[in-house]
Length: 422
Image (cartoon, rainbow, N blue to C red; front, side):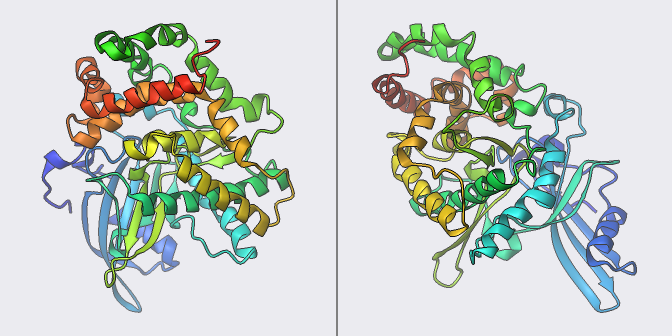
């Protein structure tokens, strides 16, 4: 049965589960997972798993299942993740994408191997929560144990704090280090992971991307202290997406020497992490990364630059997150040494050279996604309205929170020489 919910809190396509998501389906999945053909689901309650703004690619439900076996009666809280079935923008953008195949491969192949490498070196860092069921046909679906009863929570009412940031980068560095070892020793092992953000066929032509710079230019035109930067973005508006795409795909098409390639998460932001604190002491215990739908092998800059814009708050972003990126680098190198990495060791200078060399990606994030972050931070607009209504999206570019970021970032970019030779 579906629990009664306040529909205004959730994405419209997650209020009512699809007809096939029922007790019979969950029973089949649990039977396969428990290896018990006599398992019977006796009660099932389904509700939306996430709130508006938590995510956009896929739909998610919480399924609390009561079931019986020969050993007794049990209860299990599950998260069911599947593709949008309601007609509309989300389905149009995602229906032909490889995101589910990618995420299933992450859980069934890549992440277990990365953890195996860490375990062999005596590192007990946990990179993921096991997927207990997955299928691509007749429905694209994955089922996980719900982390909420285990004490994990998504941070929605604020940006992550300094401790949470460092721990998120700690776990990302472990992941990246293990993937660098795989790429160095088994380069074909991760060859299937080639579809990042650019692997969604409709993405590059979606208004979320195509309207970013035009909206940004209109804002520059109307904010006197920023108008001087307009000529620079007039120059890049017609080709920066193509230049950015070349970097995104270079590992497969034209790998560069002295470039650091890793298996990137691809969407490394706060809503794709769950944090756990001790109930007794309140001290930090763990962060778990989730949502690996656009994970792919690409330059290390993809996760790092994305995190600067999508994970950090303004006060942490003012120097492009140097404190945290440098901390990440220290963990990366320490882990590479510990796991016996035989390739060329990255350098701190090299990391920053790569970041500054991928300025088109920074332009994209600043002009297209950072306004959405400001809107979500202030709860000013619904995400779906930002995607679908050009007038509402334009308003996001004039939010005080966004303007404060831009007024800080543009002089920083100028100081770094980003506007030379455009």
